Image (cartoon, rainbow, N blue to C red; front, side):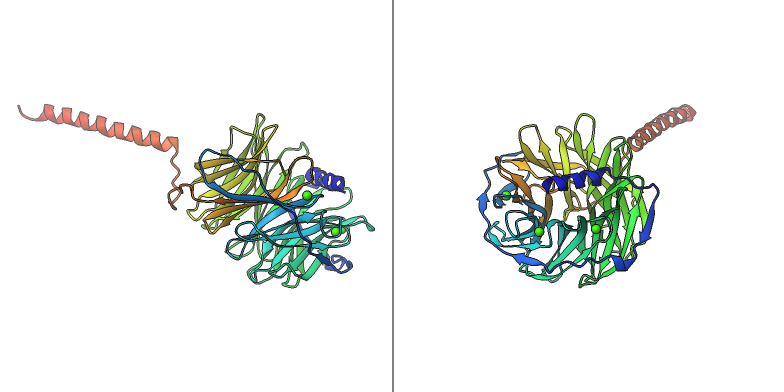
Length: 462
Ligand SMILES: [Ca+2]
Ligand SMILES: [Ca+2]
Ligand SMILES: [Ca+2]
């Protein structure tokens, strides 16, 4: 079934859909699929303290890193900060629970000590892609559930309390393959799910579902642009409604980031694409303190891949963009906006023999402030996420494969004590043309002054 997951992923990336932006409402009755009741289990996890790591280029200091898991696959896809400085990681496992893939929620204290973990089992292969910390300190997990008997894939959302105890779950499916990619709890307690849908014979399109606080569907809409779409992250905007980031793929395989702003009912307010000469996808999104957006991409240059940060205003128009990591093949994973309004970016590097985390800190206008590389004692999983802990430390959660064993959940805590860029300044673009104009202006003033001096000296009576 691991192979099935990879095939689905490839279908997802290369799937085909019609062109042109459009949205459509689903007919609601066919949406909810009835499953047997959820099973929740909790067993003890093995805990491994990771090997000591080396750090380069200055930057912050490693506090600890740990991995957890059994003999089979245990993957962490989303890290959250709990109780001020502990962590929760949501992902999926084959080592624990029913033995096929189940949703996994793992909780640690601030030192990475395992507090508890829970698994949530549906009818078959249940893969959690993301999670959100709710206002009541409980959790909501989202992903996909594969029903072997009907050979079908549906969205699965699980709501738990603060201790991971099951509260409710909902599935959204029907015809075609539905995959949940991200979830947020709205300010009013509703939930919004970012998803992908593929119908027989076509490619994936992006979908957004809104449920009430108990997981009952309120509405669902699909969004199309270009040829095929990938979606990664959705945020609730301070001014209301949502924004999501994804990628648009053309028939040639070339892709570019796609940022869509929708209102609280899912209606498109604006939709922007950001083509580059080289192929890329937007993988992570934040709404900035000024109401604009920043998203991070992996840019696939011919010689290497770089981390490409793109900053827009509240209407999706470009403010600036920067690339980082030219000296390596760096893959982008995640970002957050710092309290000084700069950004911290998470990337990873594979140099042919070893994996490294590559973390960047920028100032408010994207200029690189520090970068930090960290050797990882194993193979990194595809998904790595990062979280800011009160501006004092950084949590990284994902999965790692050490030696010949299957993946384990991986958490790393970094002390965020490196020098900080100057606090918020207004963004003042200084272009070379402006500098050239100022220099020419000053020269003209000097020449004018000299001409006038000579002229008046000649006119003055001797
Ligand atoms: Ca299962
Ligand atoms: Ca389905
Ligand atoms: Ca494992």
